[in-house]
Image (cartoon, rainbow, N blue to C red):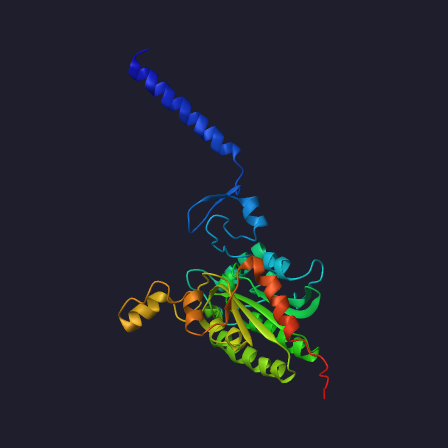
Amino acid sequence: MTLKDWFASRRQSNAVKGATYKRDIPDGLWVKCANCEEALFSKELSSNLQVCPKCDFHFRLGVQERIAQLADAGSFQPMDEQLRSVDPLGFQDSKRYVDRLRDAYAKEGPNEGVTTGLARLDGIPIALGVMNFYFLGGSMGSVVGEKITRLIERAAAERLPLVIVTASGGARMQEGALSLMQMAKTTAALSKHNEVGRLYIAVMADPTTGGVTASFPSLADVIISEPGALIGFAGRRVIEQTIRQKPPANFQKAETLLSHGLIDLIIHRQKLKGELARLLRLHQPGEVTAHG
């Protein structure tokens, strides 16, 4: 065997070993951090509430993960799971809307673009809504608006504090003007909740944009975000085309909004439940005792 043949055989042997090694690694075992590009063990990331242990980058949470993070174990009682989106306009772009809905329901089940219900947070009864970015980008169509409105009205009727976690690309364009009407509907419902004097907290998770940002979360008594969350109305490209210049790189980040007074707090995910509980207790109604 020549030296050239020997090197060729070694390369082939190593290639086979590498392929075998890759096949032996289960899918999803490792996750690459989008910020620091560190390879993370999936179970370690999950136990850390989907926060990178190397750089503190906050990954997006699924709706069930978020509910598990905030609601006391076994306390969440879902509402309006039977509501399903339909295609009132017969809309089609690169794909029919009915087909997008079918695929989304097959993947996400009853979670839809938002999951709502009653729960306890550190023992405190609350009305809880969690938007699901993995269902058509958490877009707000008729069903999402209806579920949020019913949640707000239930909170008002039972005089409960309200917590809504948003993660959305905005209004659902496939439903046209019907999706835009949800902005007004959810906003009107909040006036009823405000009248009973109960606290409303919005948690703007990454991303919260478009018609969602422009409606119910921006009307909360306390607006919270997680570190690094993208929050805005129009997309960056639309803004650049409109003003004909490049905005700062971080102009739609939570930290920038906080510095300009557009949100109230940025809270690390691992501290979020405790801080929510503290705020809820501070605003619990109680009897006022006169002195003197």
